[in-house]
Image 1 (cartoon, rainbow, N blue to C red):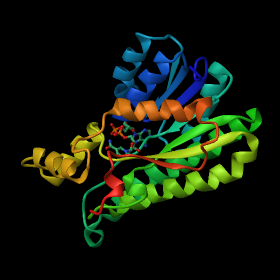
Image 2: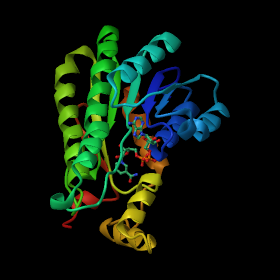
Image 3: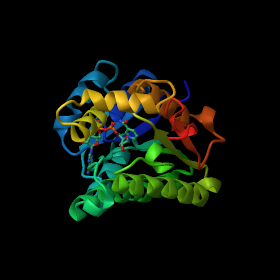
Image 4: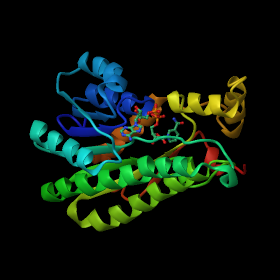
Length: 258
Ligand SMILES: NC(=O)c1ccc[n+]([C@@H]2O[C@H](COP(=O)([O-])OP(=O)(O)OC[C@H]3O[C@@H](n4cnc5c(N)ncnc54)[C@H](O)[C@@H]3O)[C@@H](O)[C@H]2O)c1
């Protein structure tokens, strides 16, 4: 496979999409640098990956903190010498609240993780990739990066900005053999969706699942492994002419009227 031997850095590696992607890349023979807030959320990911490869290094980092971001880039390069693929993925959902009621500190937090965190990752990983004159970056936006639902203004704003950062950095770096793409997942069955379900309807979270499924023409949630397949493809050389793209992986959700 085209990612065999490549060095892949994944933020939010302890979460649903990060974990599935780490396992997928490990199965394809990649070397992994796994990044999350602390070792605790990464424990399960590390144990799954270590069943496949010992070429794994973990770094604790808050993606909103510039020093932490510079440190995970440095540790990746010190450990494996290179960064071939960067999955810029850590994110939070924020609350499901109308804009007029949205807590201002929470708005700042969502923007800090989802926008500033993605920006800092791009800034410092791109510096390394520019030295290498190669690399593939995949940012996790969302269907909320290209459309929206009610009561999700902070999340929507943050994910639209991921799309903007993707386009801007793709254009800036295209001549250097560096590609930057964004994926726009619809509802994928991870902890994030479970949290959203509990916030939406604390008494009966299952109602949220039914509602969400009803918005997806495929009438189901996506699987983290389906997203991991797309990341593996975008990270590898076979996707070499895909750059600056927003790729929906949403069971058809964004093609319908809501
Ligand atoms: N699950 C979905 O339905 C869905 C849909 C669209 C987009 N997304 C996006 O996919 C990405 C991953 O989502 P997921 O479903 O795997 O979520 P998740 O909650 O399972 O995992 C997110 C991970 O990010 C980490 N994280 C949070 N804040 C961080 C910070 N400041 N620094 C470092 N790490 C931090 C968490 O510890 C967690 O391990 C997010 O950007 C999310 O917005 C998810």
